[in-house]
View 1 (tube, rainbow, N blue to C red):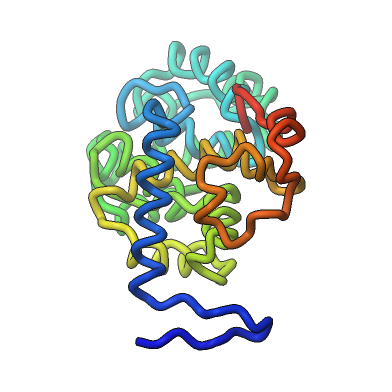
View 2 (spheres, helix red, strand yellow):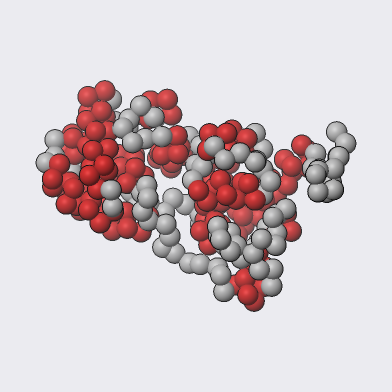
Length: 242
């Protein structure tokens, strides 16, 4: 397949070159973030499912501060499904949208109790039938609780996938499928962690730290942020993150 030109006169990347570059970025980020992992604290699939649902529109750090009290009082789906909603709301109030989140976690707990024998299902098709659970949440649970590869397209992942030129899509499901065609399935869960870590630390939405980026030479968006290393280093963040 020959390279053509895009509208700006730049050489278009062949499919093979795109795949090779995407996999190289993944390898470099693996070296950059050897400890990349889910930044929600959890013990088992049920806690991870609840924590992930609660993490919408708040920070992982705040969820981690809130869930210990919730799980201490309601350790099982049966316990949470039978809870006093007002009590759950009091615990979840620091997270914002606490009434809606209370309905979601109590509703999905009741579904786990009534439909799945109190166990978190192990398939995406079943998980997304639970209240408040979409593909992103389902893939977090599958990848981190059950070792089932999945791509978690949050705002960081989507932004980086577009900056890397892996996709032009904005719809998370389309991003998931397009990126999944570039990276081996066994790498999907860790790829998700690596892009999310890189997005939180270096490749920020408004002012990416391009000059301090480990994959700068592989990124077609290099230059969207400061390219001077000293300036860029000041933009690099450390946790805890949203």
